[in-house]
Length: 329
Image (cartoon, rainbow, N blue to C red):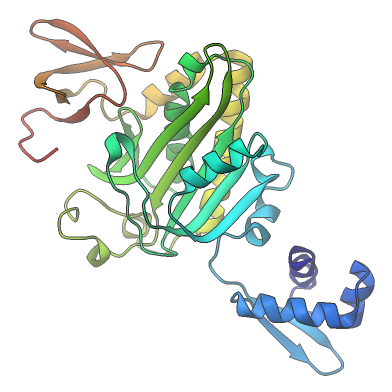
């Protein structure tokens, strides 16, 4: 009901619409309309009322609720089922729980803040409340096998990079899925799966993006390695529009790989890579080696040419740093 009332208010623009008209259109009582208006105001919507005229929407809060996202995702698979939590421990954990409960393909879990978010290699991910885009997408592909699921991590990186670049910001992908700008990290992506030998039950892709975080909000230990979209752009970025753009890109790629396979998506990843062609140090469990990042193979693994020959590096096993890097892992 809240969404329908918001739709009517947004359609009216600066024109007042009476409670009676809203009630008639929605088939409810004026008292019910008044109660929902109160809830919308409590949620941060600036709804003014005027005697004998009705209600008008003057402003909306910067939130990623279904009411705000649904109009931007109308007709999209990834906008059909949006699960919103103002705060949560982890959208991936919520996504897996929802998937196990039967949530459909394309379900999006989104939050304003998560307390225990984590990325690849169990690294933490922290973002102040309401200043990032934190979400997970549930996929239930039927056209490829479990061994191909890790490729969806690269797919997500391509989608996010394309959406950010549409803002006019120069970003690239560090293998396999970190989005960087000027060498600093903007985005973390974590993919998890439930499957049998020949069948994927579901894939959950979790994405965390630093959007409107000021430079002094980053903790001292990551100020030299992390940045945000607002810092790059020089102004606040509309989180709703950004998330909608990412979901549109993800859906387009998701449909394409199920139809045509992953090869075209890999080409798109290569075009956005800041790793390929670079000298790198590979930090693997128990060893470190150096070489030149040459390409990715048809599984998404990184191919590195070393003095001792070509090495194949698997996602999740290593970290990539510029050659000669001496920092902490």
